[in-house]
Amino acid sequence: MAEFRFVRSAAWDFTDRGDEQMTVQKSVAGDFERFTRVLPRGSSTYSKVPLYSPDEPTAILRGQGCRVWDVDGREFIDYRNGLGPVTLGYRFPEVDEAICEQLASGIVFGHPHPLEAEVGEMLQRLIPCAEQVQFLKTGGEAIAACIRLARHYTGKKHVIHVGYNGWLNALASGAQTLPGSRADNRVPGVPDEIGSLHHAAAWNDIAVLKMYFATYPDDIAAVVIAADYTGMHEGEMYYAEVRELTRLNSTLLVFDEIVTGFRIAIGGVQQYFGTTPDLAVFSKGIANGMPISAFMGKRDIMQGCCEGVSISSTFGGDTLSLAAARATIRVYERHNVVEHLWKQGERLWGGLNEVFTSYHIPLAFKGFWPCPALVLEDGAMGAIRDTFLRLSYRNGVSLYQVPYINYSHQDADITETLDRLERICQEMNGDELA
Ligand SMILES: Cc1ncc(COP(=O)(O)O)c(C=O)c1O
Image 1 (spheres, rainbow, N blue to C red):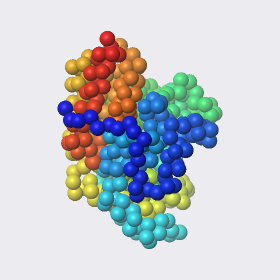
Image 2: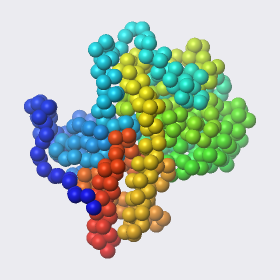
Image 3: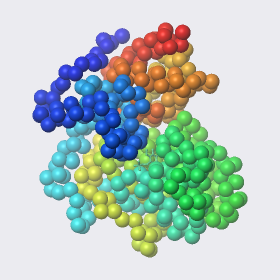
């Protein structure tokens, strides 16, 4: 077993960061209340709010490769990766150099920059459905753009959502309003008139889709699907069946590839399973953490953008994100990043599944190795997962319910993580489950 290196000290390595950083660190450390006083939920991104204080970081100050350092000076091997977008690693040299080089020429202009066409052409080449592409900043707004285009193209009103498609699109009762949480009935803040046009369907449930097509004959504009993490393998049949059903009903099929793109395959589940949607959205992973999203699809549908469907944003196509995207895509193509995400994911999550089994911990990582979900085995209580996640933080591993490998997780990092987490399981086996 490798030496356990987690240090819980207040010692800081801020030699290159200056006094200002130290001041930030001192005023924020351990004080999440400060965040809740100014931000309604304590963070602009709900999934970043710490659930396991004081073991979980209150705030992160910096990252390098596959590690992050929090405001209390603690180091973590990180599997949250900015909640998905950091696919190569923090401060990845080629990407950071590309950003700095572009910064010297300007961030955003009042006319297009050549990078907008160049990165668009790269996506056209790499993503099966991408006959035309347009850039925005977030995943949710790009899905909203697809819905607008689909309604215009089909002249129909209703939209079916499978999985989480971003907060802007959480409009249906029963829909996922955040990753991992669901509206019981109507979604607060959504008038019935709008909510009644949006419908939630469970993953891999063809019967419920057929029911909606029967209930709203010839009035469903789009089926928007984000793959289910634990059931992703079912995509093989499910996507093909939904493709057929949507074709029969003249409804557009939209793939939310915000997590699956640049992770399951560069071209997402459509490349992996071989089913081509009419429209798709990519975002996390395009630019190793720079904020960018792209919606894309068949040329005649995308041409809606020239027919009065105004989808436009000042920051769509900013040069720093595009420079980062070009550099990231080049790294993906040169080094087979996707293979790395699968291979290291299998070593870590598959290895941990064996550890769970041998210590009788009723937890498992299920799904495809680049983005599996941590689930409870049948009959297990949620408290066991909470204990595991809390102890992971305490032992210097930052996990998430859908944890992500990045290209900077090398063999030694995986071994170290496995060692740390095995010690936790030993501890839990002895103390918590006795
Ligand atoms: C599958 C999926 N769709 C859509 C979104 C929304 O993207 P954004 O937060 O960039 O709006 C997310 C974000 O986590 C996501 O995981």
